[in-house]
Amino acid sequence: MIEKKKHTLFKACDAIVTCDDQGTIHRNCDLLVSGNRIEKVAKLITEQDIPSDTEIIDATGHFIYPGLINTHHHFFQCFVRNNADLDWTKLTVIEWLDRIYPIFSRLDEECFYHSSLVAMGELIKHGCTTAFDHQYNFPRHAGKNIVDRQFQAATKLGMRFHAGRGGNTLPKSEGSTIPDEMREGTDEFINDCARLIETYHDANPLSMRQVAIAPCQPVNSYKETFIESIALARDKGVLLHSHVGEGESEVIKQRTGTRTVDWCEDIGFVGEDVWLAHCWELTSDEIGKLAKTRTGVSHCPEPVYLVGAEVTPIPEMEAQGVRLSLGADGAASNDNSNLMQCIHSAYMLQSLVASSRNHPVPDPKRFLQYATRGGADILRRPDLGQLKQGLAADLFMIDTRKIEFVGTLHDPESLIAKVGIAGNVDLTMINGQVVWRDGEFPGIDEQELVAQAQSHVNRVVYNVG
Image (cartoon, helix red, strand yellow):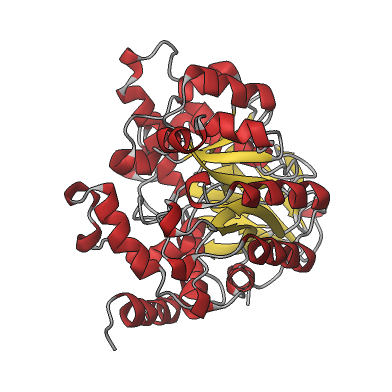
């Protein structure tokens, strides 16, 4: 179990990057955590100013940042990483789907639990403190406790977890890509969403558990599934999420007469309580509609390398005022769970195509903001995403006294986007508790966790053991 401390003082931090409205960076300052909140940032906090039970951490030579907020992932896909039989470069999309979905449909409850531990553990190692997972895979044999087990995994690691209860309702015979083993009925899906909201959703400030309703994507569900999702979400005051604009818009147009963004707008699946993943194929008019309705976007840069027909138009989205965040996405199209790397990838991708765009690439520091306060805004968490008094004590720390950081220290805000952080962070704190420090998860045997997870990969994916 994670050892709980009431107070922590980070002493003599070289830089504290707040991501506040003014872009404040505190140099050579101290940061005091009391309970699960930031208590104070000041030039000199002495031992006389702090409670006797305070742990003092020497932060000399370190930069401290707000914890990263991941707004799109598929944890269960960790079990199909680095699989040569699923190489996008050697398969058509249809061939790839025909190979990967039968594997997904074999996963059982233990696979979902252990893959969640793996994904969240990797996210934490790279400074992520809040994770949203879009869990849309519910094989019939796996039962209905999959999201429950994800909350169990989050508790074990100390992760602030937003669960997206996804689902697919359209049969393959009517154009879905989902095997029948993974398909649910609309009532079945909605009833379990209601159960999870009632059981786990906590809307209070500094909540560690929230639930969003997230029908997987319009191409794989009935229209009524989305309509019922909207009704339940707005009755219960929870968020809505789905995949949009990742190659399906013309398919939706053939089925319904309108592209996906218009289809969503027509049924009311837009608004400040909605965010959409990917959106790389949107027209300028569609981007404007998302901006006008305050609908958010989770930009997942890593999948663009493999499956994106074009680079997501982030500069135009920024110019039109779309609410932006970052997501790691699942291992079907990104073989790691490293949101830190996504900050660098997102900036580099936009720089690659800048000459062909009408809008300039946003400043590098904006990409850090997408992954912090942008994610907080998307998830409607004003208590997260910044380091300031009264907000959540969610942060990560890196030791800059390393060769790879020579010459970079003058601009801490742009460091991650322009230079990148190659290794693990030195410390991650979530809700005032240290959950990763000096290469270890406090109170958790990582080797045992790895061995257990790998045994389920071997058993279910590779039929070994």
